[in-house]
Length: 273
Image (cartoon, rainbow, N blue to C red; front, side, top):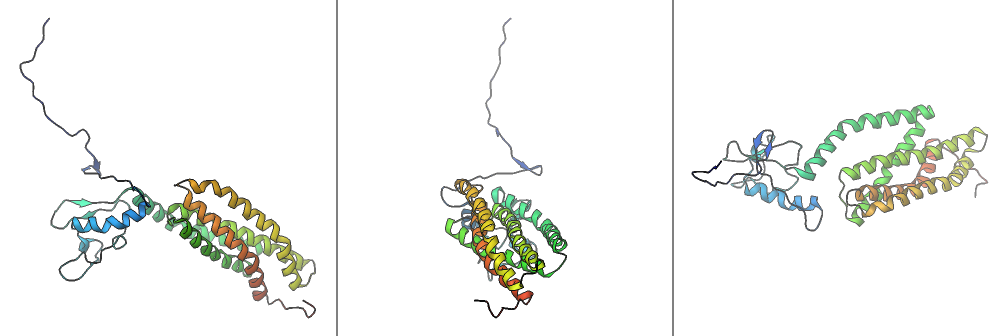
């Protein structure tokens, strides 16, 4: 049996139609040839928004710039990246742009953490209060936690890492490690005071006796983070934990005894040298 055709017509069609919330869209993707994605976004975001004439006046009631150019002074932080947020285009009804990729994922993750962090930090405070059945010891412990920010800032600047989602996770983990170190030191002070030792010598001897275990525990954690420095995804978290824990551990061994002596009004013995 013979089969044939009486004509052939060729036409082009889209091989792939991208949609976002069931709306047709044009998706542009780019990878940074050099530098961090956050640095590239900060450089191109205001230029693209100005070129497309994003309706900045309609964005959450904000108004930017002065005079005839409403986009004057527009920066990457002026209109922050918000998860699942669309920016309408001026003079083009029905058209809008949206920022996605790493910036949107980070914004989504951080917004989810903002609602849960206070709850869990409150639970951590209550646990420490129940542990000591007092308020001064937990206050001393939580006053040492911000000390880690000094080391974190230095480490991120030295390694040129952004304070993104992974760094935030590292900072949250770091707070737990510092609380543990302070609990070990303060519990040793209270234990030696209960045994009848003079408060001043209890503070001094506890700092000396706990220095080795606290330092070794911090050192092993820091060494365990070293292999992650070469990983692009975990590098910021590793730097946060390494520098924050190392710097804050040294300060904890100094600041915690000082705060304890101040809050408990520990007198200095006459024979102390």
